[in-house]
Length: 320
Image (cartoon, rainbow, N blue to C red; front, side):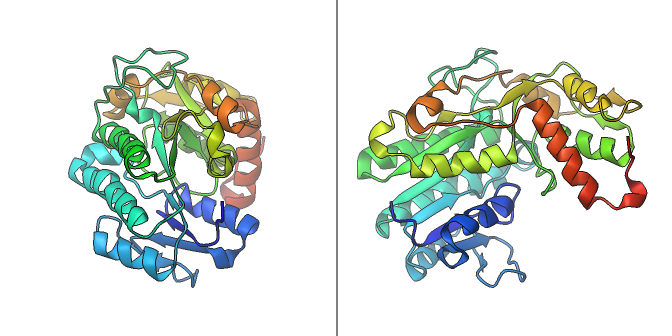
């Protein structure tokens, strides 16, 4: 696969803002065209692109002779429930526009993250396989499930090399939470490092799959580079590193901050969390493209704390 001209949509988002520098080090900055609905003056190669505007998508892919697309532009779960129309337009119409333009311009690969949001309350709660009941109850989940199916359709109907994986909750110290139901994990760690207690918007026993951002970035690249002949699945690979509850994260953080405390006051996001499984089966990703996470809960907490201490002003950091 060439990877000569790579378009990254949603490059200013939680994943994109870290994925662009990650692949720039591997392929070279000159090959990467980062884009988002808002411009970025700090990066001269960054272009403004609204994925819901099909003509703009066509123009960008043609102008920059794109052969690879990492389509990361999306509206996340909590934000999507506040504005379902926006989630529909970005997550479904945006995906359709990318796929249509990819066919028109003979793009070699379109890789789009999906989510555990595609699962619903009828899905089994533990060790959920790829093929299972998927009846999501959020616009985010509905739109991501449709995006998976669109990718599969464009592969079978037009031969497009469409691929995708289902991210669990993502944890990162570099970018702020982006409107997701698992944002509590990042917020809790940040508050612990600052020496503050935390009010969690989920119940203490709400178990959900998680992943540290370095593993997420590596997973996107591994799937993109996988031999096509090995892939039995296309757009719906389950991936996960570990599953935790808010209480388990609280107790892990107390190993570093003994006086840290959390209160639990669930809000509308609790219903979303309740509809998702507590753990998922990532065996297909391991078998078909060598998915291999490196960070468990302990390693994630250690690295988050280490890096947050470097980035948060010293006068508001609690030293253990």
